Length: 298
Image (cartoon, rainbow, N blue to C red; front, side, top):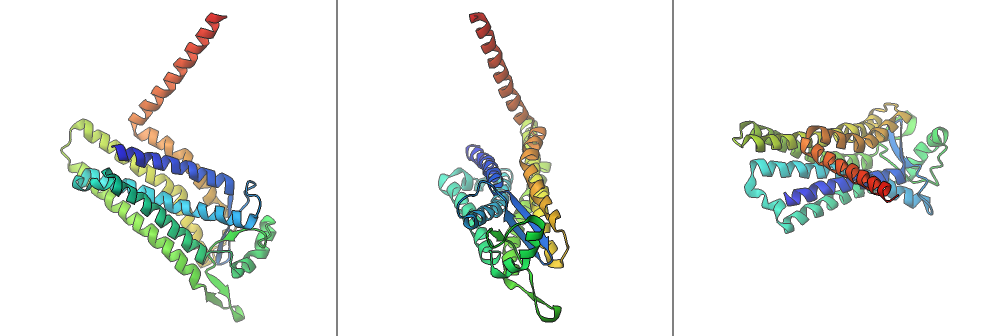
C-alpha cells in the first residue's frame, strides 16, 4: 500500500495545483457561432499579459488531461491489485513507479502541445471573435491571450470552410480521453466482477468494496463536473449551438469538484471518516486542555 499512498497523495496535490491555477487564471469561456474561445480575467497575471494569460490557460487545459490520467492510474492499480497481482511490481518497484509519472507528464505535455498548435491565438481566431468579446466582456483580443478551436471559417457567398487544424487538435484530445475512458471502463468492470466472485474474508472484501465505491465516486464527480461540461463546450460550436455566455457553466461546475469529491469520499469510506473524526477530536481535546492550563495559571 506504500506506493498507493503516494498515488493518493499525488491526486490530493494535483487538486491543490488545479485550484491554484483556477484562482490565478480565472478562466472564462464563450461560444460564438463555430468557435469556442477561452480567455483569462485573472487579476494576478501581471507584466506581459498576453504570454502570462496564454500560459495560464494552457496549464488550466492541461489540468483536465492530468486529472483524467491520474484517475486512470487509480483504476489500473485497483485492477492489478484485485485481478492480476503478479503484475503489481509495475507499481511496487520504484523504477516502474517513476515511469508512470514520466508518462503522466509526457501525455500532459502532448495535450498542451496539441492545444498550442491547433487552438492558439491565431489571426483567424482573433478576427472571428474580436467584436463579440468586446461587446460581451469588454475584452480587447489584441491585448489578451485567448485560445480555442475555430472549426469553420467564413468563405465566399456565405459558405463555410473547414479548419482542419482545429479538428485535428480536438481529435487528438478526444482520442486521449477515449483511451483513458476505455481503460477505466475495462478495469472497473473487471474489478467489479472479480469482487462479486471473490472468496476473500468478509472484512477484506468489505474494505475492497468501500475502496472501489470511493474510486467510482472519485471518477464520477470529475466526469460530471469537468469532462462532460468541457466536452459539450467543444462539441456545441461544431453545430453552431449558440450557448454564448452560458458556456461559463463548465468552469463554475468544475470549481465545485474540489468541494464535492472529498465529501463523497468521506461518505463512502467509513475508515476515512474515523481518521478525520479522530484528528478533529484530538485537536478539540488539545484546545480544551490548553484553555484549562491557562485558567489554572491565572
